Amino acid sequence: MKLKILLPLLALLLAACSDYESFSDNPSFRLSFSQDTVAFDTLVSTIPSSTKTLYAFNNNGNGIRINTIQLEGGSASHFRVNVDGRYLDQGTWNDFEVLRHDSLIIRIEMTPPEAGTNEPLYFEDKLHFYLENGAQQTVVLSGGSIDAYIKKSGLIIESDETLLTDKPYVIYDSLVVKQGATLTLTEGTRLMFHDKAALHVYGKLKVQGSIEKPVVLRGDRLDHMFDYLLYDNTPSRWEGIIIHQGSYGNELFQCDLHSSLFGIIAEDTKEVNPDADNPSITLDCCILHNIGGDGLQFNNCVSKVTNTQISNTLGHAVNLNGGSHTFIYSTLAQFYPFSANRGDALHLVSSKDGSDKGLLLQAHFINCVITGYGLDVIMGENIPEDCNYLFHHCFLNTLAVDDAERFVEVIFDQDKKKGEDEKLVRQDNFTVFDTENFIYDFTPKAESLIRSLADKNYEGLPAFDRKGVSRLADEGPDAGCYEYVAPPEEEGEQ
Image (cartoon, rainbow, N blue to C red; front, side, top):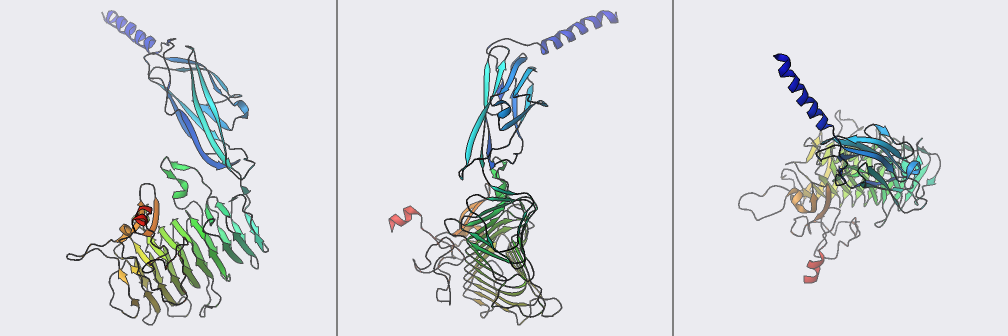
């Protein structure tokens, strides 16, 4: 009796298996691909890409046999393809079966060729699928490459040298400026640092960029982390700049440093007052943005920072540990988007033991914007009563202070209280604040209280902002490194 029951069940099971594994020669059957074009970002030539994945689905009621999968470029192609674990043999695969409602997983990589020009080279190949039913389907593979000077053993500067500007540099290990040497980076120089690489300065660094062609220091990943997010818009892609003890006279003008683990660390452990006539570092019209640690960390040294943006850092945007510092027309914006456990916009530290070593001698902020997400983004440690600190015509996100000598004509960036007129606070002061794509522009809006806040009569102030906009073209200069610019339609109405 049991055998009579089991035999029909076995027959049904075999029929089901046979049906599941049946293949059709119906010429209308096609594969469905997750995308019809696999597009790689433009990458540095000769450096392999990350892997992209393509899926080929069989959504039909029967299986599909593929006679051949062929990479049109064959072994000369710039692309490498793996289909369900099988690498190409001279660009051709034979005999694949895709059961009904099953799929193929196709992994694709690219090694971009040398462009042979200063302009990017764009290229493509095609992946053809020849089905047993006579149908042919094609997926396009595309990519691009730029040439670069690739320094896989790092780059050591032992005497005065100016780097070339025709191609970017890709620096593995680190770039080191030896004691007694000066490295000059002129307008249009591009340095792309590999993971863990840094710029160590024991000698002197001179950055001479321009508005049109700034000197750019960034990571070497040119591709996307996700479809909406470039690696270049994420922090900690490389280390940063370290100005070592004994290095003086470093000058950075129109420098764009971003996506590093830290921005600039300047070390000077002199036990006497730092020499104000020989500063460790001067920054003018620079930007330090999207950083995984401190943006500026100045340790017992002398610095001067003008028309500079320091923004979106996991650590402190500016961390001053002793020394003497002057910030003019600068924007310290602490809106780091990747963690709520971010540092301060401004952190001041003086000597804990009262010795000259590490004593904060001066911290002057003239016509600056210092703000961020927090209710109070300006903090101090061990600041002595006689410390020479000053906030003059600044926009400050900190608790209101009744100290007319040290807080001169400042506006406190605080939430509007009941009964007060409407005002913008924190991120609402700025023209572009796109937290989905991580794009920011810290130019003040027309209605921001940052506008016309600066003191134009303060001695030695620059007449133009970081972008070259005149500070004297309207009723008064704005605080921070950017001057308000009216939109085109607004200009036409005036």
